[in-house]
Image 1 (cartoon, rainbow, N blue to C red):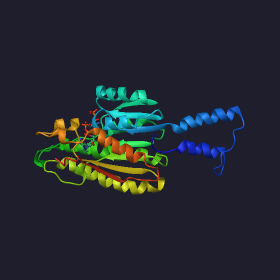
Image 2: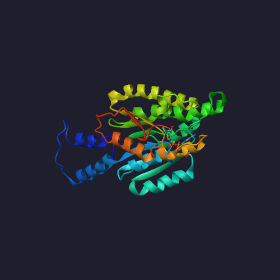
Image 3: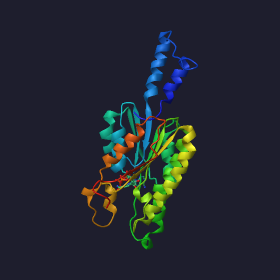
Image 4: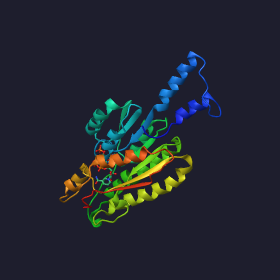
Length: 271
Ligand SMILES: NC(=O)c1ccc[n+]([C@@H]2O[C@H](COP(=O)([O-])OP(=O)(O)OC[C@H]3O[C@@H](n4cnc5c(N)ncnc54)[C@H](OP(=O)(O)O)[C@@H]3O)[C@@H](O)[C@H]2O)c1
């Protein structure tokens, strides 16, 4: 379990203004208190791009009996596979199928998540168009901006202000948010942009005790590389599980501790 204990705080206050726990006086009190306690332990986590790769690994890592996982993807078959793996370990799993390249897809996702607050937003879904900048089409450019920048912006804008203290927003960026690579201009543009946005949001959310954790993985062995032309040494890449481990570690820190940035690379060196 990671994140806030908002509802248990409410229970505590109800027990005694000023923070002291009061003895329970009646069976009704006990019932009520137990009901609140079970709510207190329930967390809602939204992970985009959970159908495969890093998103799926994060879902597996964060699954827990006290967790309702809202798993987003486009590929229904792949998302069902993630669901099958995590469902036995979770209180509830809700698959959400939406295309984040369009603002319509993002608003449909927002509507399906509903009005209940979430305790964790993982902005993970992403695409990589890799080619010389002279060959990037305007559609590819817009899709990259849509999935990698606008979707995290809209989701963060919608959910973060309603998150209880102790909640977190995790952004899966990339080493390409800080370094330029030939032929990766569209991808670097999107990750640089998301990094700028999320660093400012981190400052705006500090007072509300909502943490913004930015993760910068180097090459990680996922299907994203199948679309990239050329031969890439998969055996020298990190695994998605290694990235998920780092995310889980940052989330498991006490809620007043913020691991702001995590840069991850394989010990065998960058590609
Ligand atoms: N792999 C790496 O080397 C690496 C390194 C640094 C950072 N990252 C970042 O890590 C994140 C996850 O990437 P990955 O490596 O796990 O890649 P992946 O295996 O290709 O997974 C990408 C995920 O994003 C979703 N997605 C893509 N386009 C979408 C769209 N239009 N609408 C909704 N969802 C969409 C995919 O959903 P569907 O499959 O269901 O369409 C999938 O779940 C990305 O933000 C990526 O930039 C990756």
